Amino acid sequence: MQANGTGAQEPEPESCRNGESSSSAAGAVHSNGLLSSANNGLPSTESPASDSSTKKKKRLSQSDEDVIRLIGQHLHGLGLDQTVDLLMQESGCRLEHPAATKFRNHVMEGEWEKAESDLNELKALMHSPSAVVRMKFLLLQQKYLEYLEDGKVLEALQVLRAELTPLKYNTERIHVLSGYLMCSHPDDLRAKAEWEGKGTASRAKLLDKLQTYLPPSVMLPPRRLQTLLRQAVELQRDRCLYHNTKLDSGLDNVSLLIDHVCSRKQFPCYTQQILTEHCNEVWFCKFSNDGTKLASGSKDTTVIIWQVDPDSLQLKQLKTLEGHAYGVSYLAWSPDDSYLIACGPDDCSELWLWSVQTGELRTKMSQSHEDSLTSVAWNPDGKRFVTGGQRGQFYQCDLDGNLLDSWEGVRVQCLWCVSDGRTVLASDTHQRIRGYNFEDLTDRNIVQEDHPIMSFTVSKNGRLALLNVATQGVHLWDLQDRVLVRKYQGVTQGFYTIHSCFGGYNEDFIASGSEDHKVYIWHKRSELPIAELTGHTRTVNCVSWNPVLPGLMASASDDGTLRVWGPAPFLDSQETEGLTENYSMDS
Image (cartoon, rainbow, N blue to C red; front, side, top):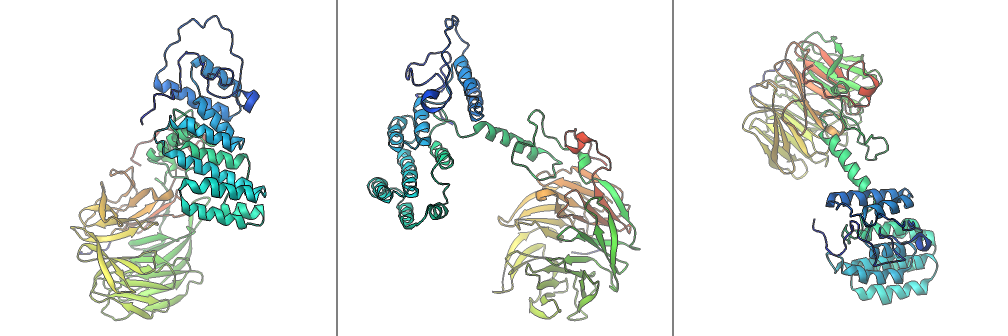
């Protein structure tokens, strides 16, 4: 433990008739609004002569109609056209407006003049009649490209000059289209236009774009049922407190018959290993960027590098780096994990740069015996680093410890290099985080707290910062908007330096040590902890979450141990699939 004093719907294109017969397109269009298969391959069945036609059918609610149409669209996509026809006849609904069906078929068959004519009929059904120009432009663009691919340059030129240009719409795109006249080969055309070529694929894609201009009562958005199901699955996953694996955007590997629930037993809440090789307080631990190693620093003057077994989630001692007379309170891996920098507590004026592969000391840097070099951060280029401390030192150095730049009078508590390679974030003794640009020597205030900032870390995308604030606990800040997002509850934070971290898949979780001997875990969006991990017997100074293995975490404590946390040791098959109930929040 280090003490530190600082939707509207159009009435006309009604999609469901609720038992009323369809007469507007007799012979060509069934009650489902789709043309007969004799003409275009879409579903068709003979209208059954039913003596029950006099029976009055129950009027369907709007939601029932919508569901029937969604099911019909999905079944049609599966090729079950007769089933669709029966469904629409029995329900009295139609899948889409007859005008939309004609339009769809003319587009898919490449009958562009007929498709343009259909637009006039659809115009009256649209929320924004002016969108007809945009739809016509898309149709003519497809027509133009297909002519070019077929080698009909004169016909394509006629479309460009006599049809597309007079629309006076998107002239910039017309200039681009005219450039395609110079393409010498169809492959060249498809590559430059980023176009699939003449055929079903490009026309289906065109139809998806055209549909966005039509009300859903006229034509359903493409694959609407799959979209709704995927959104429901994603929402359940997002609300799952313990979901800690990659999100699969597809539905193939998901059961739609049960709700998504992850078991707490799959979460890194259980002690996998207790590492006792240090013989005094362990002040810091940090996994390497590739997740294969863990480095720990202790009051016992050593740094231990541990090898991670990705299968068993067990760690074994790899190297011990000795000689840090004041103890090791902070460690930083280089971006490529080839080097490790070690810093000491307040009264330490030295910084040690080790080669991870050989275990040899490359650089031992000290600008002055009166310095205090307690924090360090690597530049993204891996060739420079910044270091500083509370006595007013703030240096930028190369790998040999040569001083490149310095900033006078900044009492640094913690450092972080921004991905732009120019800006360094530094928390100082004025309870703030400022951004310092070493190129143009400018600085600006980013975060202002009311109490000392003992440490902070930044998310991978650079948007969020996690602060351990004296007597307040863990705070989440948005660095871009410069606002406090959330204050996490539960942790005991006084005036000791405790290091928290982002973690889990997609950094959805936050973990921190605490002076009450526990490790606390929160979901990033929730102020209350989802887990309190017990086992340590003194203050937990640091927590590190493996950046590659989301189910592995380590903590360092004043009790002289490191604890490795992982899933429960034995999971049955259901729990492995995340199908079990949530468990209590206490270990």
